Length: 269
Image (tube, rainbow, N blue to C red; front, side):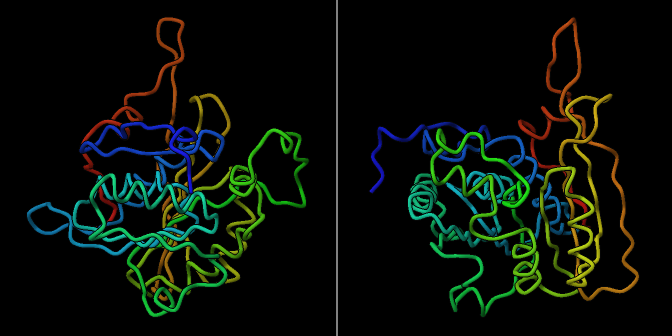
């Protein structure tokens, strides 16, 4: 049972949604915000501009920051959230209840490599994930002694590799029309592309994320599909996080819009 004193409480800044997080666990940040925005942008729109109902599956939800943002952006979507860490899943469940979305968002405490039968029987419009950025065989964990188990599991491939996330995503996405969405560290792009090729996932959209306009990409968002014909990858204009104004580094207008504005993006019409 999570102690309330071990949690922080914040407002997401959208539709009065709130977020509980563990003080010493993996914290909701820019990557999760951008993943949620990108994933929500693949919901289809009706002729009147409203978003059609869409089914989402998040692999490795943590305390649910990204899923809460998707739910806030798309009031008529449903989301199944999978999280292996018991304490994180407990906080995820608390966030679902706090935002009164029990009718459309569900938490499953499970390993993504051992899916519950209920998830195995379903397919989804969008499967999205923020896998651990660092592969276990390539990184020296200099902060291991100062980090919680949850934080280490979120950073390093303790409970599933990028390949596991892509393999499971493919198994659960609707062929032809569904999308697999992932955010990942920039220097792993070639690895992710190779894995997508291995599992016959066709890259559809790639968005590179830069801390400043004159800096190298730090991460990327990628969307893929399976079973479609003549899919060509579209490389979107880069997303710049910050810029210099009056001698200070501040968020760009585009980032402010993503964080604070109404959801207007849609890649599928």
